[in-house]
Amino acid sequence: MTGQASKWIALLGFAALVAGEPARAAPAPAPVRAPARTATPAAKPAAPKPAPAKPAAKPAAPAPAAEAGATFSDQVSVAWILVPVTVRSRSGFVRGLDKNDFELRVDGQPVRFPDFEPRGEVPWSIVFLQDLSGSMGVGGRLDWSREAIRKFIDGAKFGDEFALASFAGSTTTVDVPFTEDQQALRETLASWEAYGRTALHDAVAMLPRITGESRNLKRAAVLITDGVDNASRITSVQARDLVRRAELPVYVLGLESGDPAVVSAEGQKIYRYADVLNLLASLTGGRYFSIRGPDDLKEACATIADELRYQYVLGFETRPTGESRFRPIWVGVKKRDVIVNGRKGYKGTPPAP
Image (cartoon, rainbow, N blue to C red; front, side, top):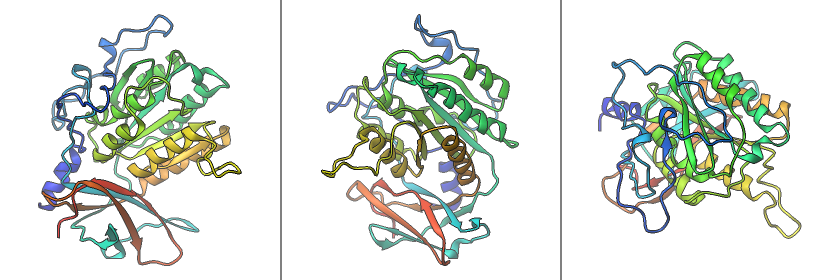
């Protein structure tokens, strides 16, 4: 595969999901519904109209998620793996590195990566997936969520675009498709109200379809939730696998959901939902942030924005045949006293020779 072909695949977002037969292992997640088609529950105020549609000149995107619900048997064809990486020193993010400064290993073995991009200040496409279940109405959590999203909007640069999606009960709604219209985004934020149960895993599984409408090469999802799931029809493992195949990093703001590293005297995880959220973030190339108050929120938003601004992206091809399984990724830099953060692995065939 040529470098030009790899970039075209990346531009399409690795998010073209082809509907398959319903999975026998688990029921299908609830469909994503666009604002115009969503039946609004009585307890939820009407959302503002979505932003205007994008110009016809943008690359073709997959069919809108409102037209069909994804199932866990949906497939994402991944032949080219992208590995977003950030490098930090004590003085901040390290810039100016080139391809020869990096080393990539998969399953512990060195791997060639023909594609390398220091993405720097290029525009981003970010979708915010907001938990609007009843538990988010407690303790000012929904206000925290609004504040977090406003911080990203306030810091937007030319070409950046955002989308707003929310979930409560059995429905995931695209409240505002990808847009640069900040007014539409702010009006929707103000209209959000907490209600219903939480189908977190079902909503996460819809992220690849939602981001299929993005136009920028650099894209990510920011999930804002307290982590409690009590209504999903698929498991966290199934949802995580769909997102991971779609090459989409997910950053998670866990509002009072706890520290996944804390264990009891017996060695058991205390914050079970935090552990689930942390796995989702780390295995997709994002990060999990435990939010205990406004100060934590401010720091987390700044960190996510910086990481997205100062990424390096390594790309490599996989073999057309071979065992498909999870394969750990390690990235190193030929520079002392730095910290490298990046994607932890992928599920698929071995790297091409």
